[in-house]
Amino acid sequence: MPLLARMVATPLVVDIRPGAVKDLPEVLADQRISTSGRVALAFGRSGQDVADQLLPGLGQADPFVIGDATVDSATELADRIRAGSYDAVVAVGGGRVLDTAKYASTRLGLPMVAVATNLAHDGIASPVSILDSGGHRGSYGVAPPIGVVIDLELVRRAPRRYVAAGVGDAVSNLCALADWQLSHDVTNEPIDGLAMTLARTAAEALVHRPDGVESDEFLVCLGESLVLSGIAMAVAGTSRPCSGACHEISHAIDRLFPEQAVSHGEQVGLGAAFATFLRGDEEAARRLAAFLRRHGLPVVPADIGLDVEQFTQAVLVAPSTRPGRYTILEHLDLGVREVRDSVGAYISSVEG
Image (cartoon, rainbow, N blue to C red; front, side):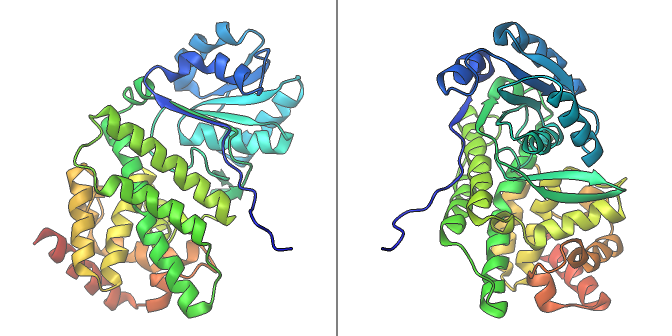
């Protein structure tokens, strides 16, 4: 008998609205995640005020401060939590805090609830943790969160550019999907239609909106798009639907120019526009660049403090950041002069 359906790992609850964090104890109890509030509450140094707000309502929760987003720090967090007895891990913070907690909770086999304080990235509900180890940044497979809470009041406390960065990460899905399809066509890499549908829906939900991060309705849509992107990765079992040449370029910038590097979402948005140009779709690249510019995101290398030579270096190094991943960069396999000329042509096109 054929399999008529498949199981997909998704959060039990997704709550995106102003003031959502105040109802966290009720969410934990109603979803049977923790009826007693016996949770390990993990947060970064900047999340102390939110933790202080939550602790009285959780009753039996214990606080755990997270340091750097490294494998060592995540392992240490797991060891500290293991010494107690908890129903779940609740992590409050941005991407680095959530990634550290996801890694630790997976090691412990505990469910994890993500309380996101910004919308700068698509890792909120993803099965991936980005952590540093030995001077290098790597991606680690983890269990996705069992719950996602996004309080728009907390999100608005973050600088606008970090909120807008999530827009860049979400729309970069369009680049990642084009790369995945290219790899399928050229190398016969399998693709997953459901994962592609979720990732594309997440990106296009934002592309066609006339408003911006000043609007609560836009922030809800952005939060939903980032959650959908995470679920797309869980469905695919890989970051493929949300990570292509755009992310390779961003990782290369992080590696080569850490002092100039800006947020992940800002860099992948720029990488997506450039990769779209490389694919020969100049009009689509200009439309994407105009969208990024409208949201105050980088469009050309100079916007993130890089000159043409530096960005050229990043593009050349980019494929080495994800060995075995086939994107437009691996497909074209351009030399130094060709990349430099392409960067110059891209800048002229989107600034013209």
